Length: 331
Image 1 (cartoon, one colour):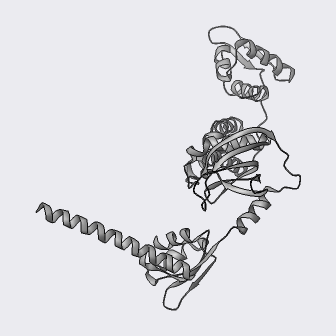
Image 2: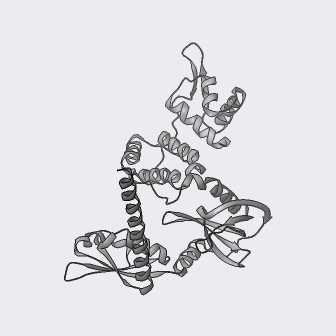
């Protein structure tokens, strides 16, 4: 909920942009009673921004003549940076901070001088960011809200969690220290009571989460950014060496950021080294390119891709055979 200071600033901006406003309209805009509104008028008077009233059908409340709230001292580029940052909040957090972000943008629009306001409006229309998440953000909102609250209040949580290696959900107790968005996935980092060490967990794999009320202290030397960078680097990885055929070499070249190394070959093909979290992820990536990509290394990845390809082939042969048999029976 907006606090008194926020409402006072909003009231000044409303009166500055539209003088002679009715008390009922102002109170409705601020979400307060008429009595509270008059109390705010007294507070503004003490701050050196007195409000006066003009009677009559076209009268209303206005700021003292000549009073102007100082413009927000931002360059056009700074205004764009603030606007883009605020616009990004709903894309990252969904409903969790959506209203707060919209309110901040509205206040920014009221405070900025004309030139900066125009730059900010252009940025909102032309510089966009979306599709940041690989999982359904709306489905994670409840868990994110609880984790955010647990981190803020330093409360231990209990959760049922299904990891990639153990898909059957298990119960964990966690002291959550930080939330991080990485490669489209939300992660929570903290002290796991089960493993008795710092761990990270993907939020979309949390089936249920409860705040226990028990409190904890985040270690004074804990650096969330440093820990997460180190933890992600230390996670098991498969280094896959792949060959893109000449007709598909452009696909690898335009996606260089996906690969740790890329070498163009004399025959027009491209050999890349691709880090992957596990064999399943690597095999899925290889098969997504069809026959234009060949696994050179490691051998276990070659075997997995071959086995999957054979299973897929057999599946479609069986389906085609069933379809043909059904057609012949009808004839």
